[in-house]
Image (tube, rainbow, N blue to C red; front, top):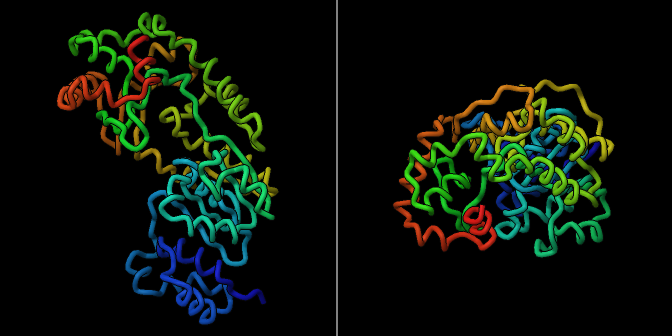
Length: 353
């Protein structure tokens, strides 16, 4: 019989309690108290902490599914990482832990344990400033298979979207951290809300070069994933006219997540089960959903219907409301302060459009 290991305890804690064990003594206590890992989930579920929440303890920036005596898979990513892990859990019989790389500086020990205990590491490409979890270093130090992929980003159908401000201090819009270039430009130029709203039309999109973004964005993604083990550009190029693949330029839909998860599993030689879309919950649906403008749909000859409303946490906002809410936020912030909060690249991209 396979004995319970320390990593079994840690992964079971993440799955059923949504947190790390308090310390080495707690890990050892559970390891010796439950020598058979098959009994570990039930043992933890009976605890007052787990039972009060029925063993449902989601953690921001993480997803963990522990299966006793199963292969352990670590997925490191941006905001897409936990959802990829969830998709892998839904379509396979492995244990999987997905975590956002941005939490490395806050909790490096979580990453160290996961890297040491995982049988396979799936990671988006991370630069050297990520230190221990940088892709180049992982390939050197890990004796386990490391499967790389590029974070999914495609703004071909959402060319008006932009961030405004630096990563740690981005300006807010009515739908979070994403802004409309047309609205920003109109505000800085002193246009009325009505005149701004009138710019959302086919002729304006053509004048701004939005019709060229699909080709450019696909080329950029292809370049970013050139050295990755698993690639997705060809799938996106083939499917973006037929199916909705992105909620924002960096938030994939369920359709795309399931495709990516399946390819990652195959690259890691993990058996994949048949799966229905409702078996996987895409948490990004609760975040920003940006509409594909009808003129953009026309320019790209899309084969599926598109709506014209924005949403955030399930709240629907019309284009007209998005414009006036943006103007109210920007006015409160102050035009000069808002302008200075952006990077040089962002200012150039918006103001020189």
